[in-house]
Amino acid sequence: MAQTPAAADRIAALEKTASDQAAAIAAAQSAGDNAWMLTSAALVLLMSGPGLALFYGGLVRKKNILGTMMQTFAMMAVITVLWALVTYSLAFGTGNAFIGGLHNVFLHGVGISPIKDYAPTIPGQTFMVYQLMFAIITPALITGAFAERMKFSAMLVFMVLWALIVYSPMAHMVWGIGGLLNAAGGKFPCLDFAGGTVVHVTSGVSALVTALYLGKRLGYPKKAMPPHSVVLSFIGACLLWVGWFGFNAGSALGASGLATSAFVATHFAAAAAAIGWAAAEWIRNGKPSALGGISGAVAGLVAITPASGFVTPMNALWIGLIAGVFCFFMVVKVKNIFGYDDSLDAFGVHGAGGTLGAILTGLFANSVINPIFGAGKATGFFEGNHGQVVNQLVGVVIAWALSIVGTLIILFVVDKLMGLRVSEDDEREGLDLSQHGEEGYDWEAA
Image (tube, rainbow, N blue to C red):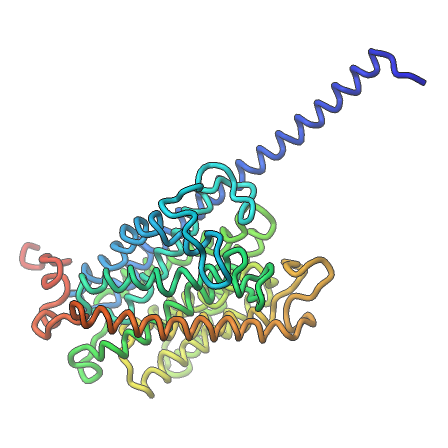
């Protein structure tokens, strides 16, 4: 029976209404995702300054607080410009299995339209600036290992080269389309939700290499070099904890249930790790210290980073607890056994904690949280995907190898060109005066 003109008009109106509703829903989702991602980008930047700057600044002697904080602040400026010029393209541009190409240099092609291969519901510039915040904090983490003894000028050159030679290829291999370790199609699919290998293993291992290359601070370990302000470090650690929700939950790249799961896992792991470190310290020393508690929380945040989008809340507690005790052992025992001067324990927390977290991710990952390999397919070892631990180990080995070789080459070149370490007189005077001509605390004026 043929439709009457009136019936046809009603059907067309209903179809238009359904289409309009679908468009409105898609626009609302895009707006919500974009709002969350811009907030997450701000939270990750909060982790650098003031979070890491205060955390590291409080741990050094008072004559070095500005010099230490300035190193983190400098990364906020220098890495941003470098990211816009070339490193974003090297990390996320179309390339091969190891490095991106130059198609997006000067942010060519990165506008307000979504980049469908990465984040189809948010503007390309939102994705770009969010990933920039990771690129900022990663080299800043390394500064904790050489605190109180590297030239500011040498530090700048070292970090620029490190971002190009170490960070960019590692980010592309793990997160870039076609990357060797990309979980969604790489030859060795490595699960790294928010940067266990890309951020923490690379920075932590590079930190250890740098500390060994530079040598110990004058007087270390015979001369006591306690933190000049645990209060500042305490505030910094709390800011890191808050900012880490943007780091991990933001890596869902949208305001979704996966973001919620990563948010919960992040918080639970940090809490369990703080308890684990404090308990281990309490048993060993008879007292739990504030410094130990905040160090444990950071260790838990590091370890849960690769796993945050793959594990249940209860498994996040286990990862945090294990990380807290393990990193305490690395900082208190292993560091003393080998005698290296990792000034602010960048390797003991980030290198060791990141490595542990990457491996535990392969054990605890669950398809109920994130079926990244497809519906009905196991994700982690305990779920039945036994080969995933091998993939995680491949990712860790590549991150270690790239960090060691790349960092050694950069250190050697910069050392020969301009020298890495401040003079003994400048080190005794402190970085604040010798490198910046100012003091963090003017006691005489006070």
